[in-house]
Amino acid sequence: MDKTNQTELEAAAFRRLVEHLQGRTDVQNIDLMNLAGFCRNCLSNWYQEAAADRGLDVSKDAAREMVYGMPYAAWKEKYQTPATPEQQKAFEATHKH
Image 1 (cartoon, rainbow, N blue to C red):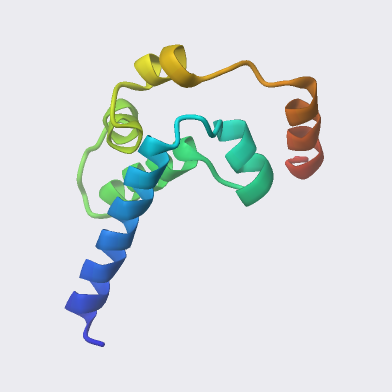
Image 2 (cartoon, rainbow, N blue to C red):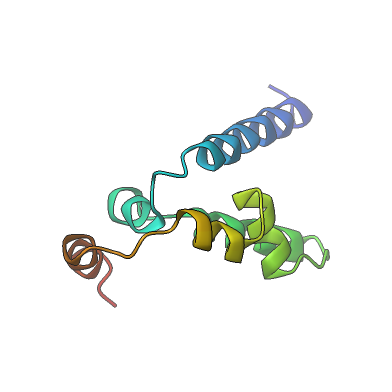
């Protein structure tokens, strides 16, 4: 496969992942972190870092809005629930520094 097609397929898969996560507002970031080791914030950070690697200035807020489909504060207010003791315990167990 040539590089252009590979890049286009990767971009399409990324867009599909973002669309999927935007539709799954029931899935909390802490659950993503506990099960997959990354969350929406990680994805937005990776997007911002990729932009910076190419000399583009994408703010943290703009990257998060791209991933969340709305401003991060609005998403948190509308969809984020407090972490349960079980979720927090699992997070601490899998993300020791």
